[in-house]
Length: 111
Figure 1 (cartoon, rainbow, N blue to C red):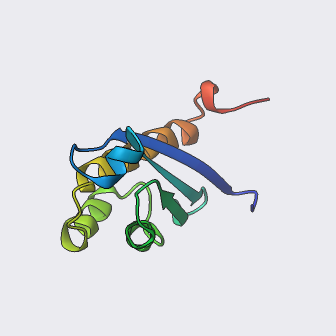
Figure 2: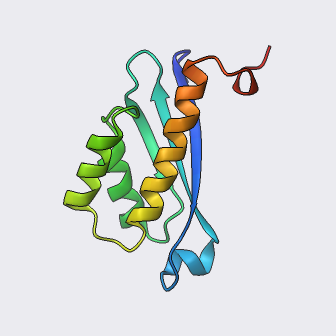
């Protein structure tokens, strides 16, 4: 991993009645972010199917983590799976962690 890349995770509760909920209590979204540009370099999640995971990755990679409005718009235009709200919630958690890291929050920086 390049020195300016960091890995972040976010979690959110999944809705009832979807396969991923039967496998996991929550969805996890992981992203690799370039701290120089805020661009999402890679992404993954704990959805049940390979296709769903690939779609989430395609919708996130290349966007800037600090541009939640664009991320939400992208999902509203292209993702009609039942987990959309949970995915966006997990991405928002990643964004909050990212902002804290950029602001130098001590809990995220080890000596």
